[in-house]
Amino acid sequence: MSKRIFEAGEMYLEALYILKQEQEDVRSVDIVNYTGKAKSSVSQALNTLKDDGFITIDDNGFLNFTPKGEKHAFKIYDRHLTLTKFFISLGVSEEQAEIDACKFEHDISEETFKAIKKHLEKHKN
Image 1 (cartoon, rainbow, N blue to C red):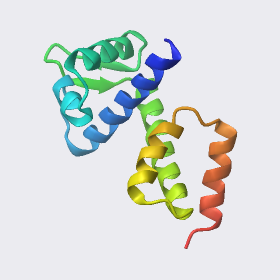
Image 2: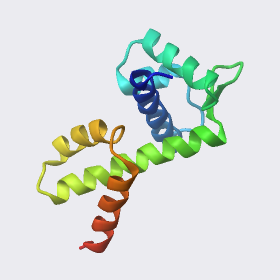
Image 3: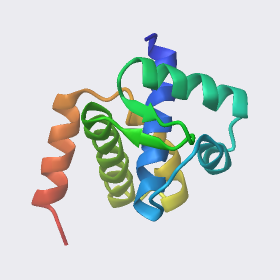
Image 4: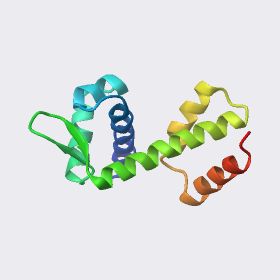
């Protein structure tokens, strides 16, 4: 999977993770509506995620995580939440913090992420 496709894949994994928190059954159309991306782009990315063993798509079109997919989706979602909190703690507006977290969550090293998470836990208010 190329880096560009992988970043898109991570975005779709995160979207599926968030939607699964709100509703049991999620289909590709729900991902389309949530992300605002073209149906063809979502379909292609979901098929790649399926081929790479991150999700399953049943005969009714329902999307489910494999254990590997759920683990990776949680990791991305945790990075998003943590980075958003970190940026807000620096004085960044909530809206901009969300935007920047989406960009950083895919590229930040594990070492830097762990340091940020540790810093946030150490400085909880």
